[in-house]
Length: 203
Image 1 (cartoon, rainbow, N blue to C red):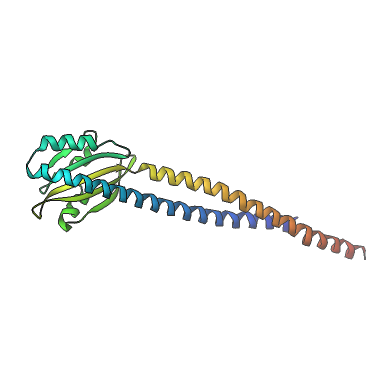
Image 2: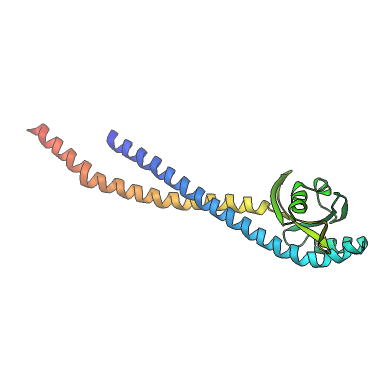
């Protein structure tokens, strides 16, 4: 009986460890995939907006620029758009963006300094945000930066749900295999051993 209990405990512990590692790996892989997908979408949208933003910044038509960022903000998971001048002064910001984003973020500074797109995952309050910054130009010189703000909280929620789902499914499968293994061992090893011991006792 003690051997059986130890065997059951060992199988459960081993199965739990395998399932935990497998579910964690799958959840991490899915998180990376979703982040890369969000990065691609943000890049495509930023480049399309860049073509409309640059002429408005060059001609200082900030009223039209504000209407543009309002029109593109709050669509799907895009929470807002902001345009900043090189000195960090906000030129247009989607209404409703958290006040933390009303000043130029570090990702915007990096994009202008390196003259290349930059992205960042940031935690503000209870939400996780994805920031994508793209420099804007006038005749080859940098005149500011365009930043897109996506609500990335869905990635964490989806990853957590996937982890629980995979853990439950894999644990059930591994537990079933462990139980079948235990029954096979019991029938093919422990029972014959018990009969042998009983036979030796009679002798």
